[in-house]
Structure formats: structure tokens, C-alpha cells
Image (tube, rainbow, N blue to C red):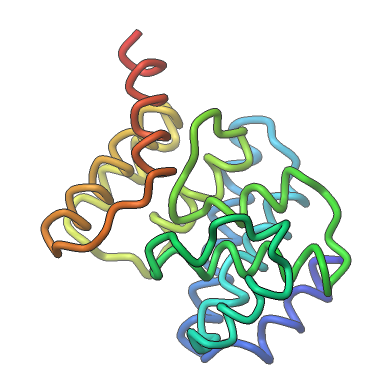
Length: 189
């Protein structure tokens, strides 16, 4: 799948607001890829597809998991806010011809992170969190930090995510906690 094909696909699947977010994530992902020596085309494609399942109904995502149980693994038992990344990666692999494991991984973990994140995983996670329309307190600091030290910025972004989920009383995804432990070892070493 080309970036142009991905853009057309998601434009049909997403609301105008979500599509604008997607284009902003693409811009930031390409900027980060160029800054850190990752493939800008892979970053662009992963960014364009990252939220392709975001607006699907819950029942549709559960059906995707059932229909692709081997790929989905335990997706349905994870917190519902992370389902869209898992469902998007499955759709990319099974319906849209995306075979690059780096791109699929980045889409799969763009909201959760995971232990042993690749450079592309980190880039998409941060691009999603710091895209142009984001305006939460501290986002400017994250934007500055991600251009200086991607791992440190990622650690701070994940700490924010964990604090946000804990404050809301939501269930914590185990992949996020594993990613955070992994980053703390790497960044503070």
C-alpha cells in the first residue's frame, strides 16, 4: 500500500477531525524519522494508518479479533481504549496488504508502547502524542524534548499516559507498564 492509497482509505473511514489528526501525525512522524534516521516513507504509512480503526464500533473490533484470533492473541481482554491500534494492525495485514512487520508493530503499539520498542514504534507513539492539534499541559515540553532525546521524551510521555489512566481510574494495559519498565532501565542507565 502506498501513502496515497492509505490517505484515500482513511479519508473515507474517519471523521474530518480524526482525519486532520492523522495528517498531523504523519507530518510529525516524518519529521521525527528524518531527525532520527528512520525511513520517512514507513513513518508516513504507519502514521496514516494508525487510527484507521479508531471510529469502528466496539462490536466490529471484537469481530475483527474473533476472525483473526491467532494474530489478535488476547486483544479483546486488553483495555478497550487500546483496541483500535490492534484492530488497525490486523486490518492492515489481512485486508490492505501491509506486510512490513515494522509498520504493523508501530500501528499495533501506538497507544500502548511495548518492551523493546523499535525506532519506528517510538516515532509513531510520540508523533501521535505531540501532533499539531494536541494542546494538553506539557505538550510543548514534549515536542521540544522529542527533538533532543527521543527515549527521554518517550519515557515522559508514557509516564503522563499512566498518570492519566490512573487518575481516570481506567484499567492499565500491561504492555504499557512493560514499556515503561523497559524505558526506565534504558533512560536512567
